[in-house]
Image (cartoon, rainbow, N blue to C red; front, side, top):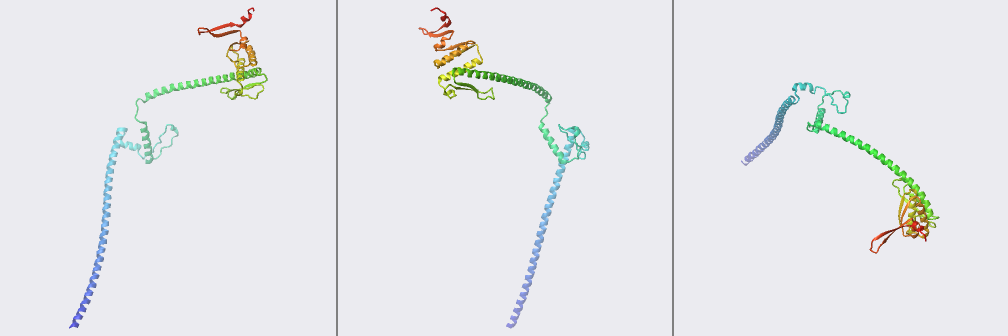
Length: 345
């Protein structure tokens, strides 16, 4: 009995194992079918999304086309109205005569020769759009139309003509003035050059008389420009090597100055001369030499000398003295020296 039960149990176990194997195989098959169905479902969903996107894009494109078509229709109507109102031409005639199928004639510039313009060219939209933008910028730069432009232009042209005439007169006057200035400069240079050379020659002779054995001369600092040149005085008294005036004594500098004055007097004589104590710093020897020059000068000119030197007074024809009276008021006393010399002793 127990053996029968064991065999039955073993048989049952085998049958259970076979059923379990078949169940597992069916489960794996069902799982594979489920995965395949899910993959097919995902593919269908993706295809559906793609189709929906394409449908949406097509709908948007159709809507945009409709909007653009409506805008184009409105634009065409606007252009047709503008052609009639502003140009006074029927739109069909305007398109026929000036449409893109017609060659585009060149636009001459202000400096172009009308006979040398190129031939008309075919219509190219990009080029014509550039020409349109350029023309619009030029039109905007012109600004609003001024109805008084012709009158203003005539007034400005008259003003310009007047100013041009005045400018030419000024230029002519300037040229005349420059010519006069040039002539004056040339004359001044000529007169100065002649006066300088004459004065330099007399200075050497006068200096040799006031400083026997000495040497003196006057030179130009810039001989190439007689209008702006300076004058330097060189003096070398006898027995000295120095030539600069700053190294001379007070009496020597005074005598050199007197020599230069006398040289100028001799080079360009004057009817009279006034000198104020020019011999105050001279000793008797130099004073005697200077008095000799005074006597030479008074042969051709009148000398008025302010002096305290008795020897200078002795050669005068008339003396004028200034003194103070007891009441403090100054008075002038005059006396002719020749009259005193003619009175009997």
